[in-house]
Image (cartoon, rainbow, N blue to C red; front, top):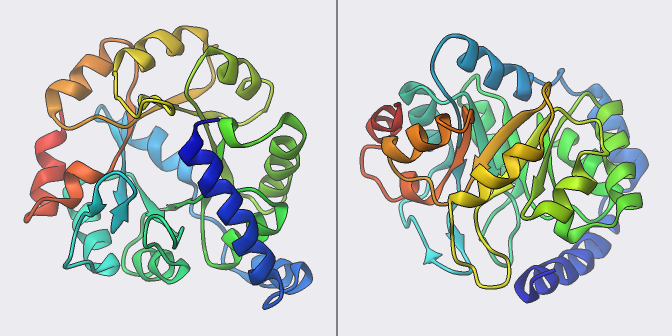
Length: 262
């Protein structure tokens, strides 16, 4: 695990311990089960792809450890509407507070402003967070294999299935891909960012996708900025993409999404 990821996950463990004092698992479980059904995250991606376009997961992210503050005029609801108007299939909303200035309320506001399903983009380290994700309206959660052992990953995946959540399993290398493919999720995210050096190489997706059997939907993540980048990935039979920072820096967010369409 990269040093920064280790630090973030240790901090997240401490945050979850504090949050558990405010809401029990039983309370979150009740709220999760009383929520309206998930909107179908994977289905939304597949619908776009089958229609002949690409499945874009557009990210709502205020800041990051590497870039600092990304968008000062940050309005999750407005951004969500702009993404929907631009043709996005899904949202990704950062909810981690310490390093990304995210909040659970951002997911609630973004999802409430549009009809798109939303990924809760966070560092999931405890099954309690799965119930919390559904309780705040998430339609999908992210499991980062570099941050989890196989037992915990399976426990959180099973919990997500019980709530009807989709699961995007993120990998960075071949060893993580082998572990991820043991889980039944149909969504595999390949992150092009090297956890140790933080450098980005789109060839990561092109290499690792060869390990994925038919029946899984691969999402390429990080470093995708232009329609040419997406065309390059399409040549490797990748048709779903998670794109964040490059869109968050645009004045015309909806127009920037349209311009990405290959």
